[in-house]
Length: 566
Image (cartoon, rainbow, N blue to C red; front, side, top):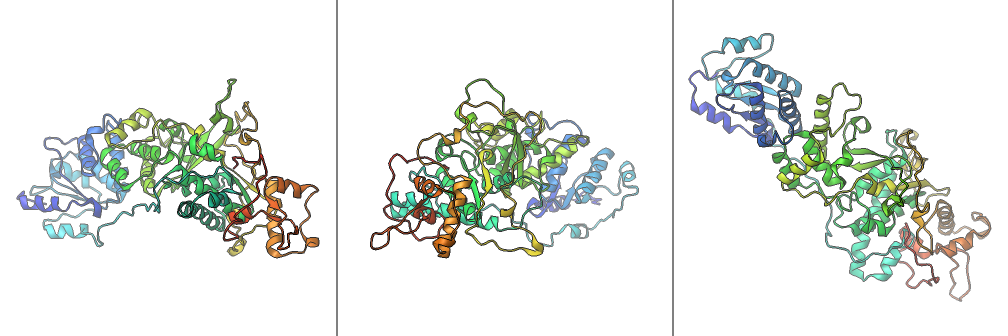
């Protein structure tokens, strides 16, 4: 209570406004006591733009209060102090009490009168409260016991942001060696840093215990790969990281197929290609420039996915983990009799999931949108994360323009995302990399990958006609690794590293040795006297798996076998 309406009390309380410490002070708009008007005052105190409410479809009596509750939880507001509370209506007090019970926030209602007005005092019936007249005593529970929270900003981890030199179009078996032979030492070191980053990250991830989610193996792989490349400064860095990840998977007995180099560099979209990082500056612009939780999450999602908001419109909360580490969007192929374009040729022929890793910085915004969606659609069995008419292409783009955030230029739909083309297959061969054991016999994640992928939906899963059923194999010459050839190579590497006698080595089917030689995956090396020795893995393959310090400087090239592979 401030019975004398002391200006020093008001000034002192306003000075305690510090959202970074979780403390918000609200001064109501004069001559306005309605609950809706005060909800706008709360949004303004939370640094949300009240001038955007109409544009973002955040009007009415209920939605502004729902947005306030969501943002208070997102901003971790622990104390809410309301000045001139004696001038508010009983309905506003009821809304405030319900708001703080919902969010777990301490509430201080400051009445600048000698006693609480009777109409307002009736609201407090049955509510535990204390009436205080000493300012210091009133502020004591609201004083933070800890220093201001420092919101951890995501570390990009990228030191090399300049464009890499032209990279080899070769697949994982020869990519690193060809880069070594083609580039100078400085340029190769930059490429190899990205390659080894991907390889080590893959080995670390594959050695972890298998997760509890009932996703298919490919969805787990998509989540890992999209989390590997969001901070890639260029498409070339992304290609180098993915090649390194392929090597790491191969070490663990898994064949990871990603789109060809040409498609990654020029055609496809998604994280690490056309997507943009959710930077601290972008987060602050969204925080102060967008009031609607769904629209704010839509702007952030358009940045880190690289796809249009329309492609996110059918994201449902039932398809996501509670912590929103991953964003799963259903993709269905379209039936067409027209000759498909390149993107359609290489897209999956059945319905599948497109999985995006959600950057740490963007997760609070998506959790806010999820909480708002549940409040907006309490009766829906599968509430949508981005519900029209608020989260539409037009409104999200307008919000981004208002925040002066440039979204990806002409963002495509899910059909153009590279991760829906990823496949992972178990190889029937001993892995090169030793997998750590886990307690209680829990297998590492590498042992649950490569299983047949179940479609996202059973209906409409008809194979769509394509102009080329072998679109992934569009070039003549050396072909990509297959599960068959990869198994033979791993057996060969296992025999080679173990110095196993020829009579005890893995028996390969008739003609397999020639197949490996023809595809430049194996060779017959010469001894110092020039005599042919036993079949050995190609030096490029050993170098790709980091089993040798450097590749052979001069490897005889078979004519007409240059090929852009996976």
